[in-house]
Figure 1 (cartoon, rainbow, N blue to C red):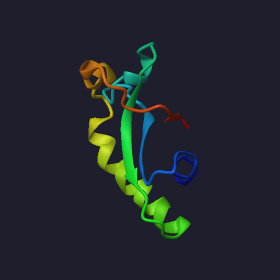
Figure 2 (figure 1 turned 135 degrees about the horizontal axis):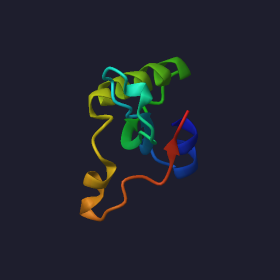
Figure 3 (figure 1 turned 30 degrees about the horizontal axis):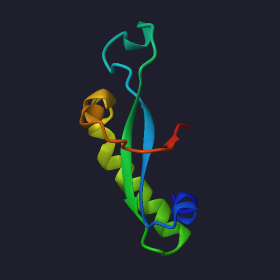
Length: 89
């Protein structure tokens, strides 16, 4: 986030976070297919320490967990771009 902030000269950063959307049901691991989904992740940098940024990013990502299966296509219906970068790790 800090690098994106520096490159774009902005403190308010929105990027895509790729997450695993595999079913958490019995035998879910046996279902074949790609179960990835990308959601926008927004973070406003406070300009503090790196440790503050890590905690802030962790908190925001944890808040998004319940939405990890919400289809990106639904969010994109407005036709406006949501983000230009994405993290997948």
